[in-house]
Image 1 (cartoon, helix red, strand yellow):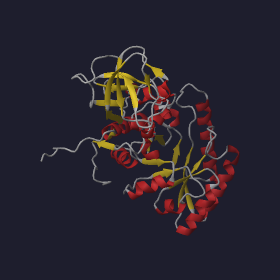
Image 2: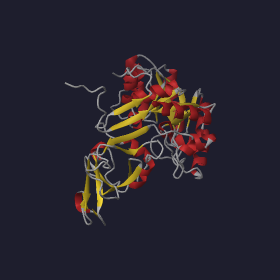
Image 3: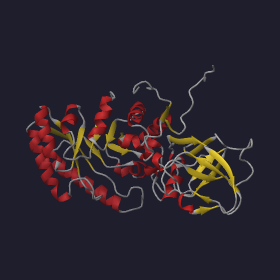
Image 4: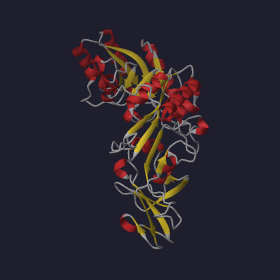
Length: 391
């Protein structure tokens, strides 16, 4: 009987380099100093793993963590993470009481205030609240015409001992296009909203407006904190400007292995619908990932790295698999066959395709490429200094 010296690698996996996260946090912290960094780890850390990324970010200088939902913040607390956390997107069913119990800051745009106050009464503990003003994005945030009223309501509850207003924040709409005048308008409105709050008697400890593009291109948006999501994962928010040009290192690598290799004649249809046909004899390789793994179904033409060369996806991407054209012949069944060789969809290594290339092929953005990789794909963590924490 023989035994493997090491367990086999996962057939398909996402490798997350936590040293890259640490590098990105340190780099961004240097750029925005003296403002501090809030590491945004919503959506399971943009698909990278919220708990692991949060720990790496805090180890390397992040002062705060940011999430969309209270449930995400509670998961971090369950993991033993005690750093300050802000959650800002709620429904009437959000567990405001648990947030107060666990010392999580609650973003409030208006309607939430009554729910937070009721939860504070039940908890017999004041809530920590940060008020959000809509400066132009048009999503969450208090409309400017209701800002005075929201501040007055919040201060009444603060005087009653049910909450404490600790911050004012907003969110940028077009900072990924640095020349857009709307960002200037948003900065002006944000400063005006802070002035109104302070004039009303709010002791504003935290002011934050900048996302990753604001942090990297607009020092006037930094204030006390910058909320950095995409940048801590090493991806660029700017079209036409690479991660490397910004001093960032991509943290995610999506890798599998070639599952089949065969010679086909000219005119061979490939995948559902036969929307692609070979124009000459060639070799096709099968890559065992598809849209059930989070690969965009429409990303025909996206690159896959095999044996040092990038090859295009041809035909429709299916649920579990996609096909690349090796653009050569006579290798299937020979020593030159790539069967079983690594296939990298995207990563940050030399010569590897980028998440940006997959975004371009699918008409999307790099944010979506990394966040959509499904739970069917195991995550492997490199340079994890707390590897046993979530076992």
